[in-house]
Image (cartoon, rainbow, N blue to C red):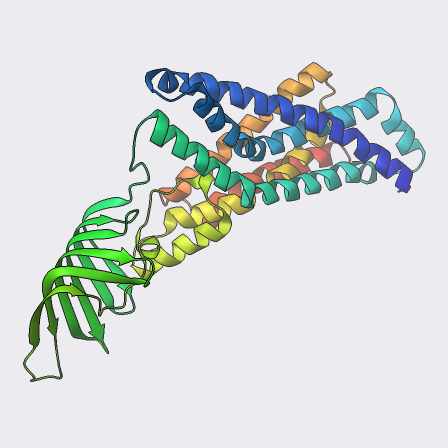
Length: 362
């Protein structure tokens, strides 16, 4: 295809894309504003705090709305070409439909890369800031991430196992704690303390007011001693032990992989995290899927700009619904994690290609 024509078609994509992205983000912003206004009215926080909460959500809104903006851009760009007679002129000039659609698919790939970049860099940190403001300041819930746990048992390193009455991962404190340290599969050291505190400067746990029992070789009598302070057990820091409440939109792929590794280390199931991993990988692909869906809608159903906007909303939310349903099915172990993450996108893509084939694009 001629480069000038390629650039011309691609140029028609970006105007509707940014217009649609702005409109869709504004809709989500106003929806969030009215949804959470009640919490703001009941809190003592200033209006500036509430505005910061909404502003921090903007990258998250962009990630969620980019596929719908891509769909709208394809509908407007291709619909405009058909209305102006450029589609027929191109075909009369010897270009195949798939060649004239290629610039729009290329633009959808760029949109997918942009979404992935925002999803993995800016959006998680900003979304967590917005959650800290909403949960901590507007709702007054200090431990909304559930860093304080009671009567827990977990692995704290290689052959080190801990039982604690209270574990505060945020403060780095444990109360009524029992630590069993093994060597070559045999119990080596047992520490029973009233309290344990993480010393960030020395990078170790300090145990207070307790008893330490050191076990020797088989047949040897254990040696028991009391202590006011003890730090002879190598354990992981609190951040590696505290499994806070998972906030799916507040983590990047690397955070999900780290969480999966930590869960596997303590023998916990990782189904939900694995589904989230595949869902995050499949998310940006929605731009390409909905771009192909947009081509199908325009070529099979000729529609006005108003109808195109409505079609973008309806199709986008339908696709979004299927993505959420797939993720829920995966978390409930009704579907494999890979199918739960990528299944909806592949189904919509297959239906779109069937539509394009019916429209004789290829």
